[in-house]
Image 1 (spheres, rainbow, N blue to C red):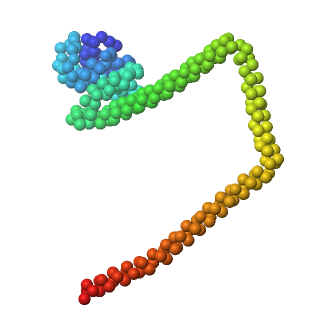
Image 2 (image 1 turned 135 degrees about the vertical axis):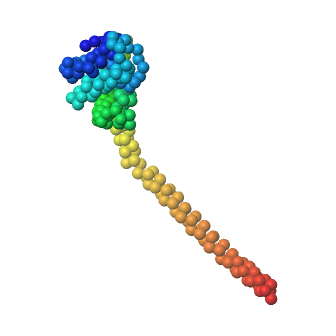
Length: 265
């Protein structure tokens, strides 16, 4: 199958004129490269092609559409083949091919040309979105694996740094590092013994001087009694003030009432 750019038009015309002769190539053969030129021809885009046969651009466009429909839009073709690729492709290339195909096979554009336009558009849409979603999921998995690898690499580097620090300390202070576990053990034992002895000494001090603790309790009781008496005294003073103020309030009220009566008269 020709792969040079200037032979694409001749190939399209040959397939269009003798489709039975190229039946196997249309179903299983590889697509001519660059196939985007075939899509541009089908979408009525201008490209430079050197054909050995003198035919009109309309005939070449029909040949391109016939080749696309027979080689790509067959129901048995894989997703990449439907969009005009021999193998995998990037997202940007998928978008370019999809845009050119929908310029031709969108239902609003293909109604007058062929009754298969809607079915072809459905196949193109399904292939494009499935491949796009698949590539997105693959990209997410790739990013997750990259993050995991970066985390593992960082953990390995940190462990190496810790090992280097320990090695440096061992080389710099061999005796201190050697006896460090013993120092920690005996230090914890000494601290525990100190706390126990302090608690025992406090207990003995309380047992030997119970009078002092009793006196402290008496002082606390006296303080509580003094607070209670002070509260009672404050309440009595409030009551006395209320008793003194009540006749004054009554007299003022009576005077106000008399004044009102005089004014009314």
